[in-house]
Length: 297
Image (cartoon, rainbow, N blue to C red; front, side, top):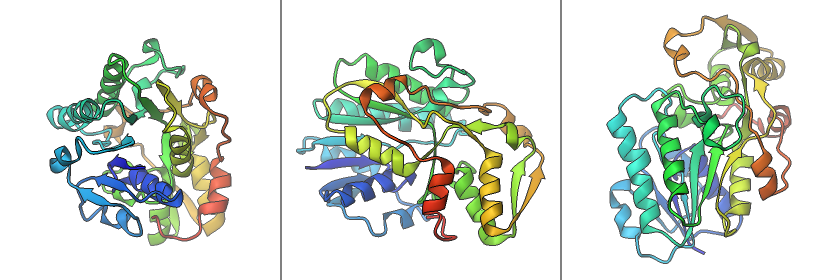
């Protein structure tokens, strides 16, 4: 079996390569641009080749079983539409067009729902609030029109190890953000009203497990990938405060975050439940089992 993984040095991509390795797969062509922020994510991984995005044409035509297309500009505050369009939309179309008739697994996003309380995967519920979300919805709609097999997973709020590269853009999960704070201070800073901000947090371990279990199935779908049970940011803070004997400090909610911010997300798992039977870990179950050090990787 040969795989292509784009975004292989990123948070979810590197965890996916790790999962493939654990299943005995090492013939993996990793695609990404390395920087000082993500280079640590490829440590300990096995792959047959690692190429830059600029050299992606070198893999077209090769015998590949599955393409996991996870690479994208994922910062929800990014505002350069030309750059987002090129990286998130044009590149996705190129990957799909040049690898048709292979298993194609696409990383979409629950951000396509905006403030919609109903997250069933239908157009009536899709109302993106930022350019990143809009780019993912555009790709989903384009894939729907192609008449070829694909899996599109709308990730909800993913957390876990190997996420430190997202700290610089302030787009990391509360797990990684609070972990970083604990490593430097004895307090955890959360926004005022965090007890009323709920997200459907799903561990990256569950995300890659679900994608791996389904990747070779010859069905076609756009599906949510979340637990179906939201938790508050305050719950995360209390987990850290309890374990590390830390104080919780409230800070003012930043004005520049208010536009485009999602205050509540919850996955409607109607479609997901038809695809497979899977039990997701709660944030406490995952935290108790996997929060084994102050290393955010």
